[in-house]
Image (cartoon, rainbow, N blue to C red):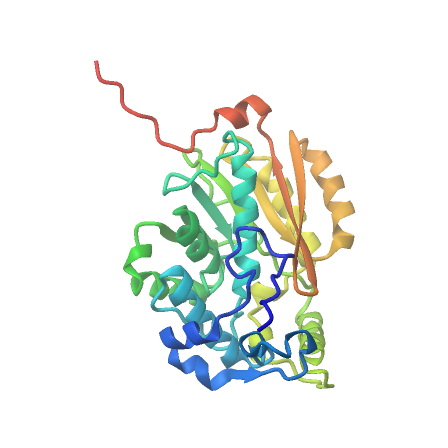
Amino acid sequence: MKPIIEKTNLHPRNQHRLGYNFEALITVCPELKNFVIVNEHNIDMKDNERAKQTIDFSNPEAVKALNKALLILDYDIINWDIPENYLCPPIPGRVDYIHYLADVLASNNNGLIPEGENVQVLDIGVGANCIYPILGNSVYGWSFVGTEIDENAIQNCKKIIETNPRLIDFISLQQQTESRFIFKNIITPEDRFSLTICNPPFHNSKEEANKSSIRKINNLENTRTTKPVLNFGGQNAELWCEGGELGFITQMIFESAKYPMQCLWFTTLVSKKENLGSLYKTLNKVNPVEIKTIDMAQGQKISRILAWTFQTEIQQRNWKFEPEQPIFL
């Protein structure tokens, strides 16, 4: 039997680098069995039956079942679901973001990844799936505040948290009541976030988002359809906003300058490489002390993390990931 080919484009600590063990996944989530198929066209894996197993990633129900199984098996999340028409996130790619951010924090902590609930993370646009808080808490024990403008998304996140009691003390939610703002109404003078995290809306309009969904389906199925599939549809706030990704992140950068000491690292995903030049120019206007760009790749999709801080090297080193200990006289 040939060995399973490792997905070396994923982060070295990403446990999904060896692909999916469908036998184990079906054991914890039997409904997944209905969606598992064998890809006989995978020539590299012709002698490896396990490696040839897959699902139809253009089928939203199949993707949801795979996510449920992964969350049970690898992240101790027993109850997880999302409403129809909301985004179903690819877990290997989402946890990659978490691992790379852990490396950023380690760079300020003598090379050691800070773990535990005292590492506070602000997730901008937590969505209905609550995926970043789930993964960040499961892998590193971090605490999260998830913000969202969509009340239905917040209610679904609450349901996920309440039906997984291990999350209750680590994830809180806050609705952003003014959609034109990102950090305003959310960050208070008392807050100290080690990180902000964000997967911003990509598109300028619903029409542009639908066209992207159709292209994705056609690429996955090698067909030609004219209808977007629900799994890749998403709600307005998830996939598009006025100004698209560039407008959203530009607003984020300008607002971040108002909270320089409340957060160690501001970060966001940037899907479109052509937006980076404009974003660097915007960052230069607010004078951060340091900017990082981290490349990520999942399959054929290339993305990158843009991170910036307003804190000096000394302030970064002095950032406390643990609470101050009381002094006893």
